[in-house]
Image (cartoon, rainbow, N blue to C red; front, side):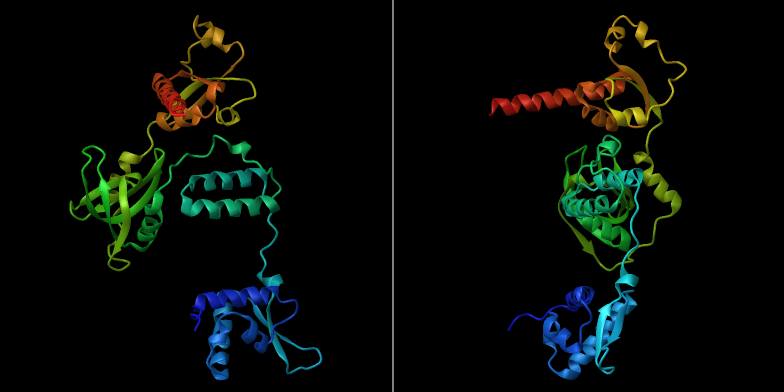
Amino acid sequence: MPASIAPAERLLNLVIALVNTPGRMTKEQVRSSVAGYQDAPSDDAFERMFERDKDTLRDLGIPVVTVTDAGHGDDFGYRVDLDAYALPPLDLTAGELGVLAMAAQVWQDQALRADSSRALTKLRAVGDAPGSTDLVTGLAPRVRPGGGALGPLMDAVHERRVVKFTYRAANTGEVRERVVEPWRLLARRGGWVLVGRDRDRQASRSYRLSRIEGAVRALGEPGAFPPPAEDELAEAMASWAAGAQQVATLAVRPERAGAMRARSVAAPDDAPDWAADPVVGPLLEHRDVVHVPFRSAWELAEELVGYGDAVLVLAPTELRRSVLRLLRTAATLDERVRAHG
């Protein structure tokens, strides 16, 4: 015998049928054509199942209405009131769609990428905005995937549920199991970080998701630990807080790096006269000098590398070194690919 259909799937099948019916569906039509109702062993069992499902859908806010036949007042049918169920038309500006695109680009994990991409495609179809995300290129944060650990940890943080996982320490390379009360998930320094209380150490700790090996396992029941005190959480997150704001000085080719130009500010009072510098001056003949605030040199360097030779870093030195380091790494990888080609 075929396996019975789960109640949640049966409810979804019913919604789809009642939304798409051209007029109404009678009980007989529901029983014969909607998957899941054939499992009812008797007429009475079907009646109870159908009435319970209608009440459940209405409790969920889905307007299931009763429709009578025009010629037979005692002939009832059902459908979903589309006027009450449909969302109002979306009128998104280019700026609003850009913000949503930036948010979606954070979710680069494979488990979430497909859903966010489908949602943005639908929004662009109804929004009054360009189909391309070029307007926000460079504005979106770059966050590496959290792998299979991200989903379970998000659930555990929400449910305040203890988790257990195998972790490889960055400084020692030691691999061992950790039992953690998860407090927060942060997108920091190009990756995902879990902040929580290590039960073995009885102290707060932070863990990069990229160093978690294997699966994350939930232990016990939800609500197993109280939320952290505000001062305790602040102390645990302090090391991941953004640094002091600095200003980068960039030499940009005309009509390039629009995101950098959009974030530019006035030149600092102590900015040198770069045009008068005998080394830098000639490089500025066909470039514009812009000043961009930042807090993490490493994160801005990753962003600037994406512009290639369209952007030159004049200051600070730390940022220029980070960009050069990334470029040299990329060049080395390219040479290796050619060598093995």
